[in-house]
Image 1 (spheres, protein in one colour):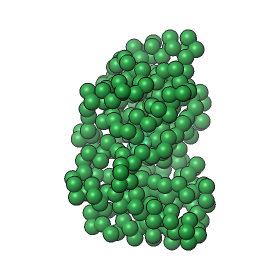
Image 2 (tube, helix red, strand yellow):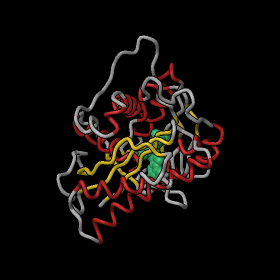
Image 3 (cartoon, rainbow, N blue to C red):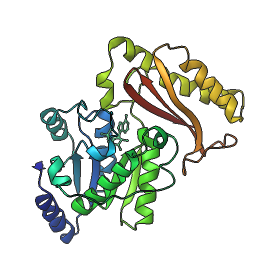
Length: 281
Ligand code: AMP
């Protein structure tokens, strides 16, 4: 496994692989790796000859007052985990390598990223699309692996790839969860034991929503949302940011639940820690 921090070195490695006809897979991450990230490496394993995992805490996707400075980092531990999986390259650039002084170009998807997380984090997806466009130009991937944990992000990136004609096939992997159902996230490391207990209600609330849809055949969006809210409101620690039922291909709000098309998305804060989760219906 090679660890590369310079854009030039990463790109020339990718260019020679492409010249040899090798298929490159990309897993973009912000590091502090867990099984959710590593499952994306496994997802690429049969289709790709080389897998590049990137580790970069991308400053442009954090808003003012968000957790950029506190975001957990552990490059050494991350490299050890990558060494246990089929990662061929780790690309871990510095901030100034990615955004040298005078940097002024951004890529923005203007529809799927506007609602849901885009409401309370209005510059977040612009940072995500910008850094991913840069990573595509540096790593030259044939395949991109994304996690469904960040369902809106996956839709925004798929749209950008289509709209800007990047020759990249996207694979979206399932959400990897802890034993109590909490979706794995680098941000879970912020949670105090009491908060950690309450955090499991996020997934419980989604299961309750799915249950009324499946067992009671409820299709009314407001009734399903009320069921989800009912579980979240059991916790005095959780402040709900949103509960929405959307078309999972477009992220547009649904009028009625459509089996096989809809998903429930939820975001909430436990004190300062913002967590998201979702479930398909
Ligand atoms: P992050 O490091 O949080 O930016 O995540 C990098 C990639 O890993 C994104 O595509 C995420 O959707 C994916 N990911 C993060 N957590 C999980 C999880 N629990 N299950 C599946 N994919 C995940």
